[in-house]
Length: 98
Image (cartoon, rainbow, N blue to C red; front, side, top):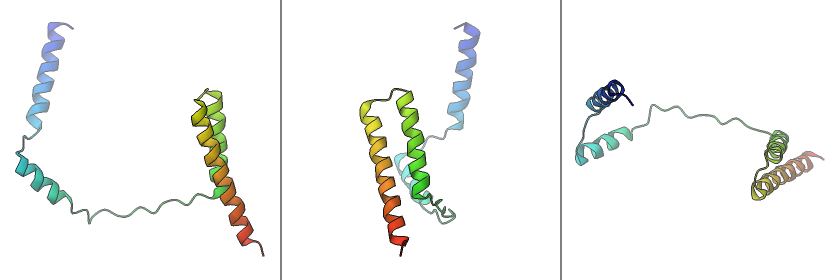
């Protein structure tokens, strides 16, 4: 690193430090307590994913994992998750059938 680069880096570090306010422990606690008022946060409605979509996603993930030579335990986990999603799909279909 040249002297010019070192001076430039040091100047950037000084500017960064100047922007950061140094707080005492008490000020940090007060700031955190005041930030707990998250009333302005709007709740997010999660997207519903069907069991069929989950099975398809796990199949794709499993194929990718096998092609990329993932660890055996990771592949087994994906298979277990896929199988569980498939069982839920079958159970849901059976409950809807008369």
